[in-house]
Image 1: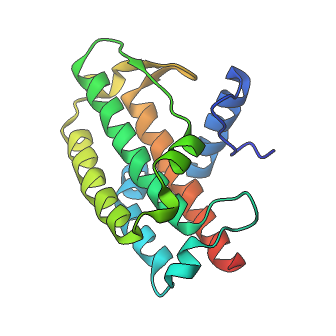
Image 2: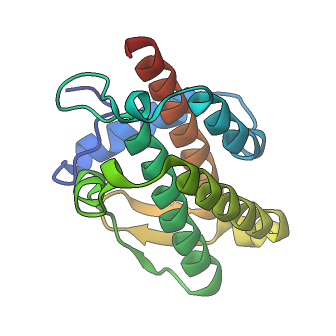
Length: 178
């Protein structure tokens, strides 16, 4: 299993390894630039693909481009909620979510990709507005993630930028496979 696999049932050690790997993808890149460029990257990842291509998984048991785009839209919804909780409350608990269950039960396989792209764009713009308005003290505020422990707003920004890069790479890989 890859370190980038993110099952809901993972151990604390696996969660820390996943976090380290995702942050490693970001490296020295500016997280705000990465976060700001992802909507265009998603748009490019799906351009000129048919509905059939958007729905074809990389391999049996893997996600399709449609799944990944919907995952990113829903992940930004979750991230926005977490940001708001940490910015507005003192040390809130931040719940995890089972991304595979969301994909299945929220019917990513049936949902229009264009809608996911639009939702992602709007959510990302809203989340970037919050970050731009955050003071240095705001960036140090922490929430307590149920699986990963304490996370500051600054850490969350870097983590989600790395998460974007992970899935943009995945989209490139899926395009090559299909």
